[in-house]
Length: 369
Image (cartoon, rainbow, N blue to C red; front, side, top):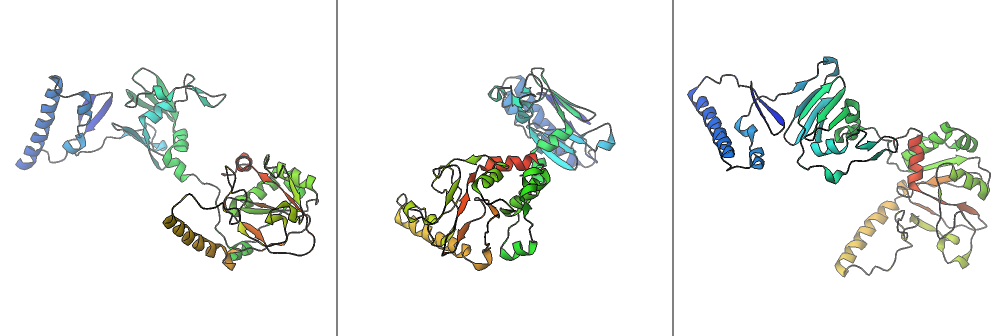
């Protein structure tokens, strides 16, 4: 085994089997060793910079066995390797790769991170972009990185798995179901009772599970008043103030100048497309298209036609008849809504919720929202 030490890292080479066999093979290795010797001599004479030496492709000169560091406890099943530009770790059936700047930047020591506020104290811009650890060692389940300035960073192996890119890819998130009317009806998704929703975390969690799965969810047995609807909404989120107020309550009123306040049918849409943070698509609230040239406009109409055909497929529509005491929550980022034209008298109240708050409530209840 040959060891070359330099630039704060170790490179291990294992002599290949049959090294002493074959003239041609001996010549190949002599040539490679000679080439490396010349480059090292140039370095000593000042002809080659340290940076240039780091760019030498040792792997191409010596395509040899990789040296892995194993843990003392085989039960951990952990091995790691120090590369020139990154750290590689195999643990918990996961192969992870970490940039050295990332490892220094995410240090959780008292001087780099405030564990009470969960905010960083280290100035990321102060970290050398070419930083490499001087030494790396593993003690039980903790990795220790010693940096050129002597600072020591400690990482628990499980923390690295949880926060690595590779670990995040394996993380189970709350599933979303792509559904149509048949799939939703066959699923027989249960509604949540008003009292259970308000008074128990189990009821609220069941509701949010349905909401995250399908983008819609129902609460039953709600007293049909604006006050109780508001109380229901506040259970999961802050109510968003809009130009319509905090809670909107309306009947058919042509004087409002909005199709929603009429008895006319409303095509599939999402609300507040004219806001700075719009919810989504609304065919009624489109402004005049005057910011793109004619050829792009025609492509837009072609795309619009394709989308509209899909939205109006009967199999993609779920028709629900609302009645007093039944509240419907709709994820405006996933599900469009509309209505058929009607006759008679109708009262409806509702509000807009902040998406971040809804998702945060789900996370507090243990859902991966």
